[in-house]
Length: 323
Length: 205
Image 1 (cartoon, rainbow over the protein chains, first blue to last red):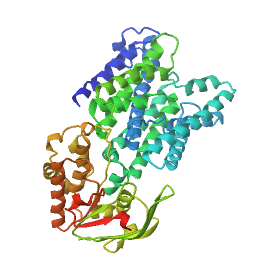
Image 2 (cartoon, chains in turn blue, yellow):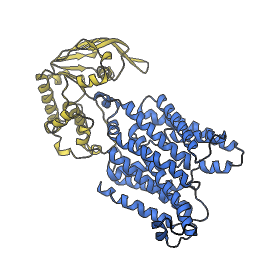
Image 3 (cartoon, one colour):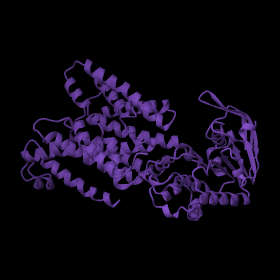
Image 4 (cartoon, chains in turn cyan, blue):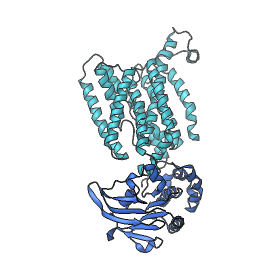
């Protein structure tokens, strides 16, 4: 626990650094930051408040949502390999958004897209859930469901021929460059509600580490606990995928790093997985837009490049051995 | 006091018949061992009595009530179960894992049971670093802090050293003397089961 406390102070520092970095230099960052109504016509104000702040905010919210979703996935399947991408949830959300956009029902980043993503994410998750006959099968069947849905998304994307095809394809690889203040209005309430429900159901999630039979022996229903976790996870993933696309690796890595910092208890794990996810995505996204401006680097590759070494380091330090 | 009757029970797993028309009576207030070689269906039978596996034919009754008609919550109040082969990947402490999901009455008994099973030395140690025998005692402790008329234990002594075996046997005898019904799955060696009151051989049927 003690190891984890500095994280809370680290996040605002990274956020301020992220606001100051980018293609354009911002003069007097702190003056504009602490006086949001100062000189609204100036370039610095617009860059900070119209462009960078929403993006920094979105990175924090999406990263936190994915970190929490990852911890729910691993705790509910009792498997360290689980994440929303493996369970089919992410691919389902992507397919939902894609179908909504291609039939001109919704546009990317809108509330309608979130609804499409949520329907897709739920449907895919329920499919995996109903086909699996054990906690381990949730992983193996989930990989299968993911592969099918990702193939459908990929094939559909390559067959699309319309003016916004480029931005759809851009979204499908994951990017925060399309984020606006409106995106935050959708992300924030969903994240808060999802995080609170996840935190509330955390003690029952602890039980699942005993194995389903042992949970049943003390009178609880493991499947019910698991399904509730999956429902929260699906909504959290839906809101991230619909606003910034599928972002690789974060949901898998964040809970492992958080567990190293604060232990396996889900009450604390949910919070720290969110914090770690927020930090990694914020650093990755800042690197994506500030490393070689004005070009954008693919965010999924950066989350892997930053998250994976930390993941490996924490696993090495936690001292498991071949048995 | 609780009587368990297994009447003409058949169970198959993955299309293969594991137990066929097996009958036995587990006497109340006694320690009963079910023995048999590997693959003879002992653990399957215990899972069925614990309500974890559906049975194909026949019926299992607790004091005359069909197991199928007893709810999960009621079963939980009737019996405690010790499973074998636990693998822990999350670094909960021994105490955390024993206390997980238990009610207030059970929590009051944690210290005494840990003491009786010689678990105090590793109560705050991560369960991922425990030996097989120590990890097995977590399962046993989780069952023994619960006060139920029936205890079902799947090879509880398999990974224990001599001293621990004696401690566990003494605890089980103590429960029997309080009128509890105890069912133990064991390996075939009858001679080491002198502490049991009744032995049922799965091969004998």
